[in-house]
Length: 205
Image (tube, rainbow, N blue to C red; front, side, top):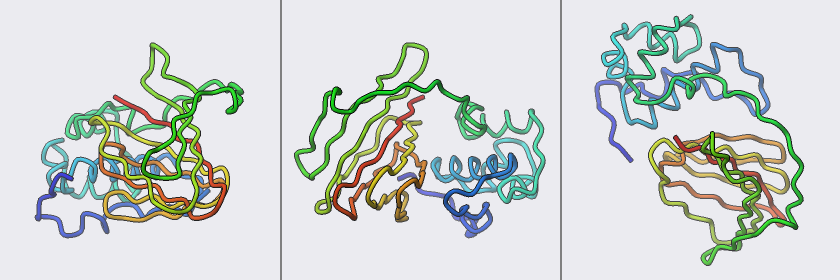
C-alpha cells in the first residue's frame, strides 16, 4: 500500500463519516465519500490533494465532510490531482437489467479456499467491467492480490454473512449489504455463514 504523508494526522477523521448500510446519500455526501475513498486509495493527505488541485485546504476539508458545494471546475481539478476520471467522483450511469441463470454459467473454484467464482457477465467492448457470482463457505479466507491500478470492486451480499478486509479495516456484510472498495489494494473475503453468496462487480479503468 502506498504510504501517506504525515502532514495530516486527521486523514481519516476529517472525511465524511461512513454511512449506515442502506442509507441514501445526498449528492454532496456521495461526492464526499468518493473523494475520501479515492484520496485514501492514492495514499495522499488532504493537504497534498488540495495543493495539487489548486484549492484551499478548508475547501477540500468541506468537500470531504459533505458541507461543500463544488463547481465543475473544482471537481475536474480534484480528479486530475487524484489521476482518475471525473466519473469516479460522481454517480455511475444506470445499467440495463438482464436475467442470467447461474447454473448455466462456467464456474472457477479456488484452490486455496472453499470459494467458487462464476463469471455472469463479461465486459462489453464499450466498458471495462465484469460481474461474478461468488459462493463461499466458512473456513480459509480468499486472499486477493491487487488488481490493476484503478480497479474498483462492488460487492452485494445475497445470502449468509461475510467479512471483507481492505486498507487495514474490516467490514461485516449481511444480506443485502453493499460495499465498494479499491480492488488495486490487497483484500480478503471470508464467509461467516454456510451457504454464503455474493455478487461482485469489478470495474477497471
